[in-house]
Length: 91
Image (cartoon, rainbow, N blue to C red; front, top):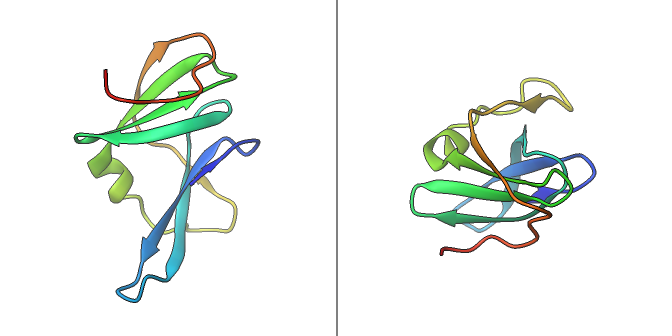
């Protein structure tokens, strides 16, 4: 789930019954407006940061459980400048 204002992507695990359990959050850039999984990458449109960030999906899925309340973890990413991206989709 993208959380604008906090500027994070919150990662949740789903139980076999479909119950969501919060795992942790990572820095997703300034104002993560929209994100999409395309292939083996997670792409995040940072609307007010004027960039698109891309993360290895394996890194996102391997995000460790939050070690302390409110900790925002860092993941490696690549970035490309783009004025106010509000939607991410395959080209």
